[in-house]
Length: 116
Image 1 (cartoon, rainbow, N blue to C red):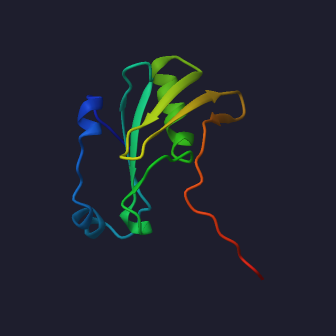
Image 2: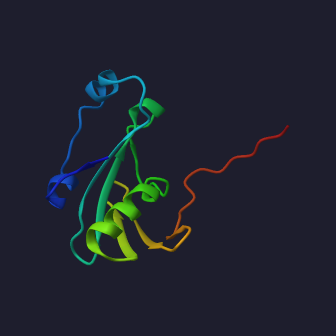
């Protein structure tokens, strides 16, 4: 996880995915975060060319790292997150004693069926 100071810099970040892929062969992804703006506490993006997709548009799993990090930093248990990828998405994240609650809306972009 990398933190940048300027959320606009994160929004405009244009990684060289080929170079990123070649840079390491034993990680799953790179999470970049910044302080939020415009009513959001957290901005983030998640790059993972090693998985076959350059950027995950909205990643609930990364918020299991982001929520405790920003909660401690901001002194808040309820956070509003914006993942500022091209497709983007919003999440409400709440830290409880034993767990993290993530709420959002989802859009089905692909459906399929597996017969075994």
